[in-house]
Image 1: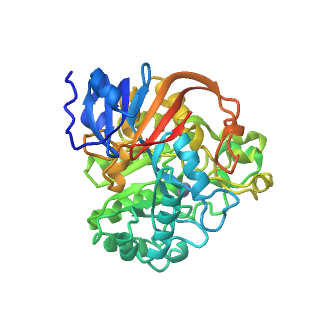
Image 2: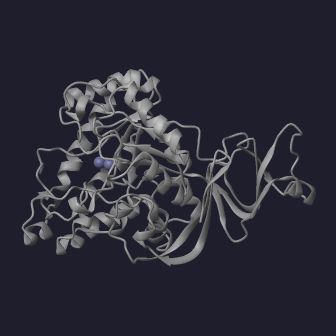
Image 3: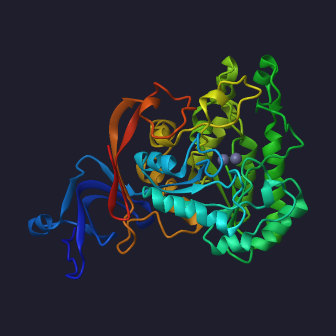
Length: 438
Ligand SMILES: [Zn+2]
Ligand SMILES: [Zn+2]
């Protein structure tokens, strides 16, 4: 343990004392202090009294976890077009309250994010909100119609961190191949919502026993697996990084396992709902459980948890998908897909992965920080000195009930009301500023 040796030209801002500092990228898990200066991580070590009295703000983090700011690479903030459901401002406020210092918006807004002006619009709204760092992916195809490629080069230059037609998969293999070849030029990730519309375009829940007894059209596991399998063949012919969004079936886990075993440049993500809920939840026709990909079987859930345990999953994401109450109050067939879970995400990951001892804290934090950062190629997710100070302080033992009335999100389509959970975000620091204090 070393003392601080701060350079005299640095302006100390913030000292976080005595926390359990977990920085998985650097292999750090120890009790120490973190000094922030000029918006950046200055040093990890031990502050003496002299330094402590010179720092304008001191946080006592005894008994708390001090980790790199959390990163969610899959959120829907609904702006432009559906601002009554969420805005970049409301979504950003929800994000920092949940410990997320960086989020990636999906491009399935209205209009679609498909050129550089659209990308700049998202960035500007994010800066104006002044909460979390807001990134965006751009669409792969114009209007997400799966026909003509969007302005991927221009969007890449404007700072889009990847491309996806999320909420739809790119159906035509030749179009997908063109997208992969085109993306080779900019070293950005191509992300896919794997769903072959040939298997259940009209489905509203998992295809199986429950869809049969409920009389609802199903979305077969094959819809996801067929597209994922197809894409695994395509990426052998392109030099590009591929990311499978929200995988939900045991078959997808095996496809990812095989792809990684043959060193394909593939990553994947999993949501909290696919790690916690099954198709059985739809039995009362509660539309808060209507999500796409749908909640699957208990065997699928166990396979996803095992995939996390085996290190096959590269990122945990919420797929935060806010919707109006009036829309979710429609009958199951007509209601929109989606769960708004950003603000309880950390507690859900604790319940799904820490409490059953699938992961320990450093492993969980890795899936919420430097690993997702690597997928989208941003220099974030660590507490490395010199990097921007994005930091989340967590009370791992706080026990409470999830209360949707406390959410900053504009929407309440969340099935976790009243769940007893553990693990609460206490402070969120973005670029050296405290942007949330619980
Ligand atoms: Zn999706
Ligand atoms: Zn999504």
